[in-house]
Image (cartoon, rainbow, N blue to C red; front, side, top):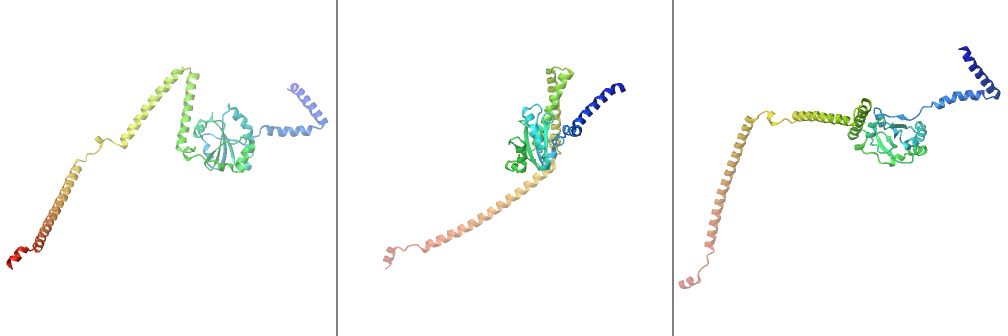
Length: 293
């Protein structure tokens, strides 16, 4: 140990003597203190997952959706990191989402192009489509340029029922893909065998789901044969209804008879008046008057 360590100690001593002779020993010590901190500087960009995405609903955020294999995403990363250094001054959170690791968030936000950037302010989401430089991002926040962009409709918001269903669908598709890879690559099942397994699983799950739906429908809307019979009440109700209708008919007929009697009396009075008036208005024959004279 001492024999092996002595050459190293001798080399370090010579290097220290040379640095001290050149007057660079303090500078070297400063570099040794600063460089590890600079190289290990922590990124200010937050990483969001499917379990922490609800943090976006509070405060102000800028979110980047990217993929490691995307060239445009790779060129954006330096500018995004520089922009994140201004997050504390702008009072905004800078975040990123890897769509290859978080398919649920990719489906929740309907990511169809990479990279995609969203601005979020107290639960309102707006898609950023401007230039992708640090200064443009800073101006977008400091000048409140996001106010000129129409927010995403509540129907297509990430917290809506529709987007939650879309997220679940994306997660299911990714799970199926991983299962397919496991069956074909790890276990060694042929591709057609994996497809057959998924087909049988789909049929079986559909059968179970159909039985559950039929059971729920039968519980909520039972068929007629399971309903209690109500014949005595129906008969009683029918007899009472017929009696009431018969009574109404009798009253209506009595009213019609009264009206017919009144009309007959009125007609008789009218006929008498007409006959009396005809007698009074009968013309006198001139020939008969001449004979009498």
